[in-house]
Image 1 (tube, rainbow, N blue to C red):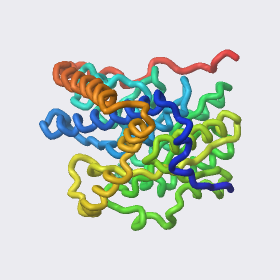
Image 2 (image 1 turned 90 degrees about the horizontal axis):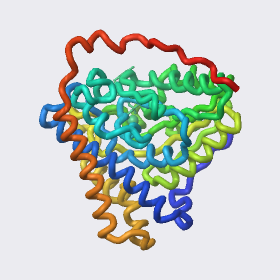
Image 3 (image 1 turned 45 degrees about the vertical axis):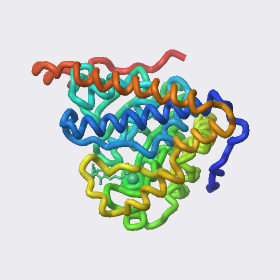
Image 4 (image 1 turned 180 degrees about the vertical axis):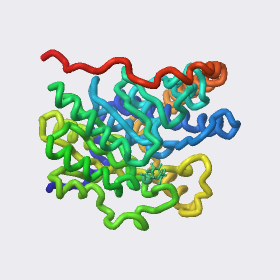
Length: 341
Ligand SMILES: Cc1ncc(C[n+]2csc(CCOP(=O)(O)OP(=O)(O)O)c2C)c(N)n1
Ligand SMILES: [Mg+2]
């Protein structure tokens, strides 16, 4: 089965300034939003678990650039970036983090349990790997309905060692489901480095026994991610079945908010930030290609800061849900029907 490496500098020369600015803005929104979430957590305004996506922004922004209206996405608990990248409202996401009525799950779900039917975002899942069969199920629903939508099913390098992933690979290949399995390989599963937990470094090859093609992608380079995403999407839309993208990335912050980080050195993190940061890469492309000036970038920074501050204000001002909300939103009251041809 074909596997290949994506060139990190893919399409550097023919990318437009507007496209680069779009990626810059989207990645910066995620980064600033997550930094603010970290602050609110420190202030005691966010309860429970909270897993930040800082460092991994190019993965979801690159893949969203390859998606079209109606495509679906589902992911793990490290999910705020995915929500923002698919166009969910930062106010609603932040208010859900603080457990308020204005949140996407009316304050009843929190960080790991948000959904948007409108944006085709199916969570937010706290059980490691659980979203993988669900993602194949979403793809099955599209195949059943006869449309050409694809589902992006994101999971981590740690989750990739779970049995249910391979049961899913088997069914997805057997039924030629339009699902892209995106392995966000940030090199750690909580405090366990990939080399301690995983028998082979090449997770993208794990689809081979099922006939699923896979490739490694430079997840710190948004252009490389978009290119790989477009290829995977074309494969799925053409009815050729599932595709695996192992996107090599890195998380700068702890696994969740309480992480002593004894499993890696400060120097390792610092080196990644200094040499591979996805936002800095786009920033320097914008400046060196004269697509934007320092002042243009400052204006974007300000625009993003305002959006994030507004979401933080909203998340503090929105009231807590009423106690009788405990009894609502438990069962679905409509069953989706097959679309007319
Ligand atoms: C079934 C299950 N086992 C264990 C856990 C505890 N746990 C939460 S995150 C995690 C590590 C997952 O790592 P990875 O898949 O690499 O994702 P990352 O956190 O790096 O994004 C573990 C073991 C869980 N939530 N669910
Ligand atoms: Mg991981």
